[in-house]
Length: 113
Length: 114
Image 1: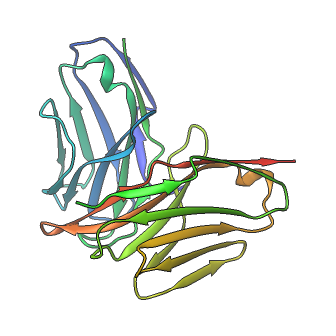
Image 2 (image 1 turned 30 degrees about the horizontal axis):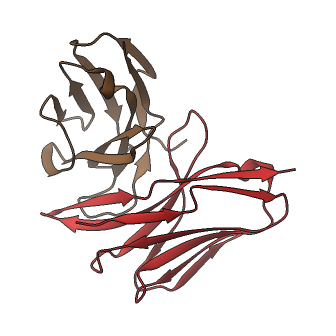
């Protein structure tokens, strides 16, 4: 158990809908990262937050957004969902901005029908 | 930006034999290289990592080697056991715009045959 928690574990929704994925980092970690894992794309970095502020962006679509709250939990919002958004979404956390070691949560499996 | 290539994509070995997975990276500024193990239905679990000022690191049956000149690093698992069966990912850490990001390889599905 990495100490990173994610909810929900599974999510099934329809095209065009909006969903919110939630992540709680390890106790004491200030950085949160979001990744998308598709069958043919491996693990793709989406976005990083540190202590409530966005720090780095990867291949995140404009339909996706994220935020980190004062209690350090983070939410990833996915809107106008398409079939191709079906994937595993992982959250990871690390102690600081430049702390390299990232610990991953168990993931949320999103299925868009 | 950084690009990480991982080989092979699948690997099957007999229980007790060794397994080696190799990765190459493109950005010479990358300085941290973790390896993750992902079992079915679970998130990636960090199993070992190495920094650019070290050439080799061992932890029981697992070892990682780094060749900075050639920009490649490898995972070695000795005396493999059935519970080693999983997908393994290498990654390279890159500092960008006041933050840090991991770039992952495509993964290696390791199967240990009893």
